Amino acid sequence: AMSKYDFDLIVVGGGAAGLTAAAGAARLGAKVMLVEKEPALGGDCLHYGCVPSKTLISIAKLYHSMCRAQEFGLPRIDPPAVDFREVRGRIRDVIARIQRHDSPERFCSLGVRVEFGALEFVDDHQIRLDGRQWSSAKFCIATGSSPAVPPVKGLENVPFLTNRQLFSLDTLPQRLVILGGGPIAVEMAQAFARLGSRVAVIQRSGQILKREDADMAEEVQAALEADGVEFFLNTAIEEVRPSGGGIAVRVTPKGREGLDVEGDALLVALGRSANLEGLGLDKAGVEYSRRGISVDQRLRTSRPHIFAAGDVTGTYQFTHAAGYEGGIVVANAIFRVPRKVDYTHMPWCTYTDPELASVGLNEKAAREAGVEYRVVEERFEDNDRAVCEGSVRGKLKLLLDTSGRPIGVQILGPRAGDLLSQWVSIFAGRLKTSTVAAAVHPYPTLGEISKKAAGAVISEKLFSNTVKKGLKFFFNLKGRACGG
Image 1 (cartoon, helix red, strand yellow):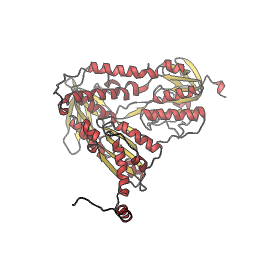
Image 2 (tube, helix red, strand yellow):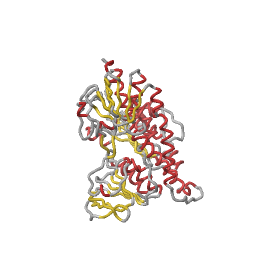
Image 3 (spheres, one colour):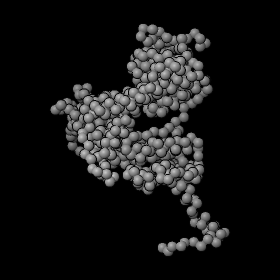
Image 4 (cartoon, helix red, strand yellow):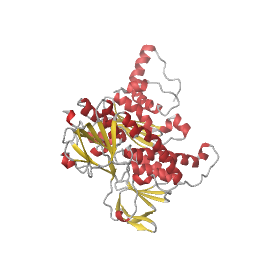
């Protein structure tokens, strides 16, 4: 039945989910067309998201280290002010380098036809693109998400930034006001503060990074406050208005008088919304809500030959989740192996300094799920490598179920995202805590903190009084050699 259509698969959107689906399907021999509405492939992640933000974070960290030189026994330096045009140039270079993986030429070499433009469905097997019609047996909708613009009074009367404009500014804002307390908000708050902006973060609820456990979020907040970021939590945003060449945000912190928070730039980071506009989903019979396109566990929409993956489904808005889902679509659409998504071990990381990385259940999620657990903690101030490097803020938190199996890990500390990789493998391989504890790590490394946490669980059993008594009885051990 495939032959009556122009293509086996049309992929809508050239971000992480769409690129993975298109490349995978083409490599398996499917005839694939990939359609992207922006002038380049790579999606938000490459152009306005992870890649520019992580580049900016690394630049800010380096500048911050230069300012801290004296703490490391180096001569004091007072570096000149940051020229944001130079920073912007560095960000563009990095994007260009990574863009090579996502070039139309590379996809063409895999056999994928790449078209640029805005497509709309004519019916559930046909699309229109630049006045031409194409048909396909199957579709994968991977149109991603955009910064949500919330209904804040007066917002339409002031120039504001989202992650789309942030990395191409001409000058460093002297005072930056950020609406929101999620990952993008806090990462950018710290980076701009380190580069020399005065930054204020306004958050409606009482905690930044609301998915995280409160103790971890508070420690991130303390790190940012040490870098000069000012926080307004439990604060209602009343209105925004132009003020002396900049903007003023009228806020009411809980239990306090209203006040104006002034800045010369405003970053709106209050979540994201699925890109559904103009696709003609109704004509294709694809059901969706304000959250995004509804899919089943095999990522099929209400039309089983039309799949959706990535941010557009409104599930996990991570690049690695989108890539994973793109692979699930290939399995179901091309291999026709009924593969379901499994988010049990979906990791995530917020790239503040220290980083906050998580896999499995945290305390919040465990309580909500009614799972009994206990916690083992190890602090980075007790890790020799962290001490050597002067990055001692933070801790590792290991959650265990009643049988002593690891069910979740959160790491707040230097290189936490990289340290989490070990735990991702531990969960994927369903390793026991004893296996982790027995492994030998090179000294001194940050990774030893994971072994130490696992070791703490084992040593409770191993060095118990029962074991001591037994050994004393059998082998006539003499006991303590030091009083007290």
